[in-house]
Image (cartoon, rainbow, N blue to C red; front, side):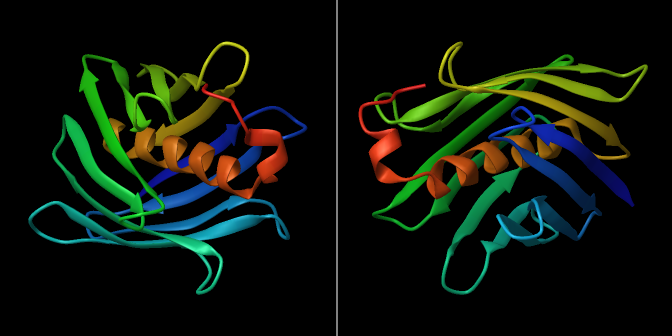
Length: 167
């Protein structure tokens, strides 16, 4: 079983990540005890990832398809949701969550010697650093966990603080 642990964001305004990854599931938690979300995804034999992040009332559905090199699909609903498109190239992962105007970019680099996945979600000023340790997990899945963590963080902020931002 693989593991993805670490942090997306800083000491203040960031979320811890602690997820177990197998060929059939992604399970764990992002955030802390009170402000955060449970992660419960199922992976079928065709690479379809489905499930929920958060609780039954406050949470986000996930429906994605993945290969070793890329993940695409949707988080959230058809109306209030975001497209996800992440792609691996060597030891780098790039892509986007959301659209061109309302969304954020993903720029991560993996160091296979230490198992570290580092980089940035969002822009230089309105984004979060990613500092994760990945073991026995597809790189694109680890990047997905980072992207969904940042997306969940954005969804829990007050509407007042997100107006007009385009990280």
